[in-house]
View 1 (cartoon, rainbow, N blue to C red):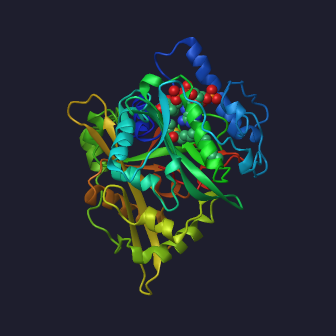
View 2 (cartoon, rainbow, N blue to C red):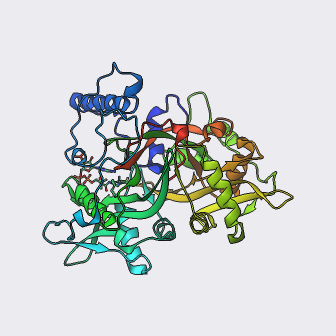
View 3 (cartoon, rainbow, N blue to C red):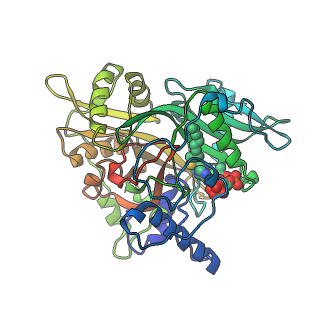
Length: 444
Ligand code: MYA
């Protein structure tokens, strides 16, 4: 079990299957200066999110030379309204790409092409998000990348890579996909940004800001001016901070790879007993099919009106994001006697490499996606999700953010809090800080 006890140190590893290392986590080997920086970042994050509730905490200034030049709020800025930060027109957008260092070139990946997909897979598989102890690294599969990056309306020009000009080897990337996102009462056509990655040998050379500026230019050229994104790191300025929770299915493996540890007052045998999951469904859930798309679309869009930061999904997007694809995404629905779909659960499948472990190469995880409990209790609904993830899909762990109403079932179903946090951001759009349960958006 991943729970809050003496195992704090071990819990850090749970972050590996989340987003990048939480910058504010204690490290036993840190120097005094590092500790002071960490504490400053902690204070800054707290003040940034909650300053309107506690005016007495002054945020120490952390400098962000790149982010301070962008249309995002400053860390110490108090936000009470929603709306754009700046307004421009397409004719103000630079027509030519940003300059790259000599020997590098821009490349728009063709993800329909197996060779380009391989190149992206290989870059991410070796260089994408790791935990702060470098024990796990996300391993987004090729079919997953196609699913995540080729929704309706995707553009090749937004699948942006940096290559070595001579060898054509990929050394960096960033992606955008189109999305309609509601922030409070405004529905905004924007993009979701993901897969920002720089080859380990090219880190800390300010390539990330160039990637971000170039994807911004390419998005702006399509008359789109806002973006939604998430990250483990704290940059100006999060609109929400959500916590990862983990439901262990295979404690033995999770302990062997260092994802979990055995509490002092427990044993592996007890952990194994506590993590058992029902083999059978109590209710007749079935996998969603294309025929269900209009009903799922209504059910989900109606449910999402309860939250303040959500996607607004068209039927063709529901079809893309929810029609089950083996080892990529699963969605199950419950139908009543009148043929209405009343409840649904869904999750996506994302493994991580286990780095340097002789026995286990991969940690097989699923992540809670969008769920609606209209006639069942949250616990009954998500019990079915656990059964499917464990017994149909043979996963090791079920991960979940405390977004939407997820807090209602986490403890009942023996999820334990991880120490990984995910920060939500908006580019060029103001939004007052949201509580975790006000967030209704899940990005991959
Ligand atoms: S989150 C996943 C991010 N990827 C990883 O963690 C993979 C492993 N790490 C790496 O590949 C590199 O460390 C990266 C940074 C590429 C992350 N989001 O080039 P640098 C700022 C935003 O010297 P490097 C995801 O994919 C940093 O604060 N900014 O650093 C969502 C500093 O700026 P400042 C970040 O380590 C991405 C500058 O970069 C992040 O070599 C959303 C340093 O640059 C981060 N995760 O490379 C992107 N990490 O000095 C924003 C560092 O100001 C999208 N930085 O503090 C914005 C909207 C754009 C579209 C708008 C359309 C309208």
